[in-house]
Image (cartoon, rainbow, N blue to C red; front, side):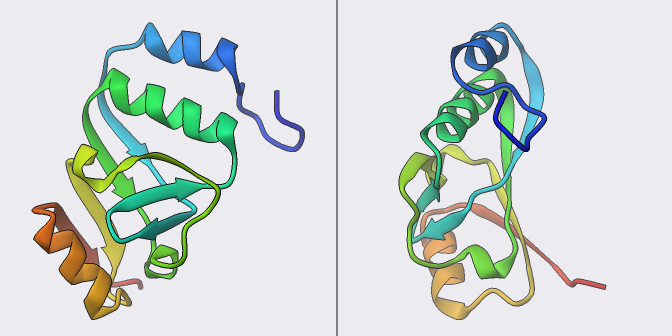
Length: 111
């Protein structure tokens, strides 16, 4: 268990996720830089890789503030996501990068 969190990190969590067959993986990222998803923890990245592999469909949920400089390590490239859902505050440049990567992008208006 990671201190302050309610998830199992490392090998126990990865082994459990490898045994699953999920319809959909909803995940986030600490940052999206170009087409690269990044996070600040090796343990979290490892679990995200396992989650994405276990799912038939993967959706990235990130608000527009996440399109910034990269963090420490990367679980995958945007090409491994079936869809990106973000808010209407996304800047033109990162939106263009997502679209040029032929990624389905859904933009929602925050209420």
